Image (cartoon, rainbow over all chains, first blue to last red; front, top):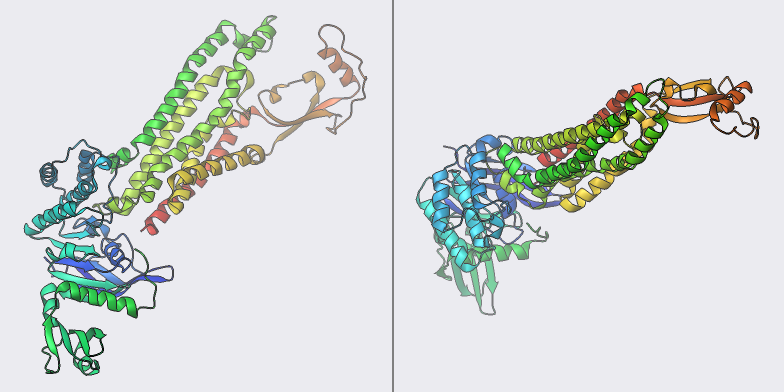
Length: 295
Length: 316
């Protein structure tokens, strides 16, 4: 079985700056993956490569085993995409927008589209440009879902929305996911938006993959170690130290462990996902000499 | 895709149609009036070998009535440029507003989308050109019988060149626009570029397309058949061999009262003065039109191909 998305050494360079570099990851079928990273970390670049809007400078990305740029007719039919700021034709009415979806997608399900718009209470004759940001995002999601995609890709879908619209959008998304058969990747720079829906996570920083895996495993393998001030070297031999913080008396380490930590000098604490993500993002920001490119 | 292309280009198409409707509203009544005046005054008969006595005055009054309208026609050459540039707007707006991310992630390939979008723009451009050239050709028909169609101020509003011009304007604006991705600015630059090229071709290049005919003829044949309706580049008094000559002042004295020309002509001819002319005869009209249409059409195709290629390869 081919994975919905398989990236291998994927890289994209704009001018002399690498927006994404050496990205290797696999998105499992049926997963809902959060793509997390600071602004400019390469999230948009990665997603545009997945849907074939960009072509790789380096490496490859396969979507359902096909090349999105070289074989768009195979890939596009199976992929629904909502781009950043959910672009729509502002001069089109809602009905026109659905008609566009019908004309351009052979797998279009008009019943789903109409049911969703009615459920949202949007007037079909209203111009899309006159809808609120949240409503526009919902129309864009409808357009992507009525294609009946196997893979749904959402780039910062809620970044521009107010908290209420955000919640409604995520609610709609969860309903779609619950119907099954859909693999989802969605990016955000705010983890809280994604945590409730996602079961997998990919952390990007400065164009590189920091971590990728099921959220449960990620939480399970990361531990905060606290103990008297000490060097991290001993731990680093066995486990991956994500971040370390030293005060005069105390040292605390965030560690991705390989199995158990058998060292009585350290006290072990569980950490939540947000702390883990932050540790990776902060670490990379301080370690990096490369300037980040804005997406 | 055709519906989508039409829906995305509806405004521009309707503006084009409105522009042509406005033109028709202007040309159709005046054209009917001119054609009926032409028949009523028997102008057609005046254009034969032996014009009647009343012809001079009826021709003069016809010219007085319609010449100003004909010089207005010269301004109509703005329209193919405006229409062409306008029809490039939907493509450029797509990139400026970044809605191509929406279009290119539906199920159809980028190539098909581009073909539909450009194909629709080209089809509207050609249809508009057809309407324009038919209207002007029909309108000018009486004037063509009097003055011919080589007149440089209206050469570019008739025949097939209009198709080339419109496509060229579309190509320039599209090529600039896909690179720049600023619709308003690209349209202005496209229009300026279009007119710069047009002025260059009108004033410098066109007269070099075909090698002109030179002819030396007796002054009594003033306006021989070959010069009739021709595009005359130069015309000057010469000797029999065609060398430029100065006519000494007062050589033939003042013209006698009443009907001067033949007498002066005879006198000058007696002194060995001939007329030398360099010109393109009226029969070369379609050759000129063909060359200019092919030139603009070919450049337009190159520009459109570039715009398509650039959009296909680069935009992400």
